[in-house]
Image (cartoon, rainbow, N blue to C red; front, side):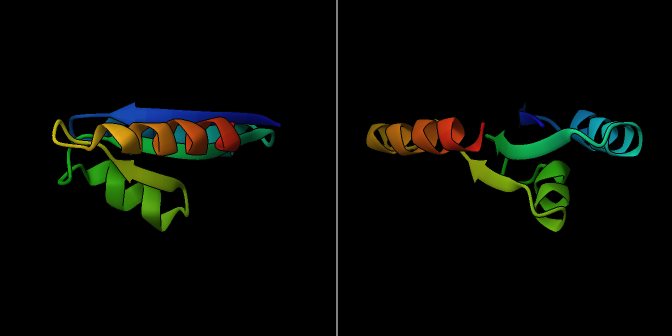
Length: 77
């Protein structure tokens, strides 16, 4: 099983395209986590609909929470 994490800051169309391609062509890929700094990112809704663990990280994100995000990423992969 190949576990992947994705990061997006724009619309997130690359995540949606990659998800659609990989899920149709490969059985051994799991989308484990999605991170964005854009609360309005279309891919955030997409990721949540696909039950991909999703996280929003902004420039005002408390520093101590980065340790939690890093731990979640490590566990996901």
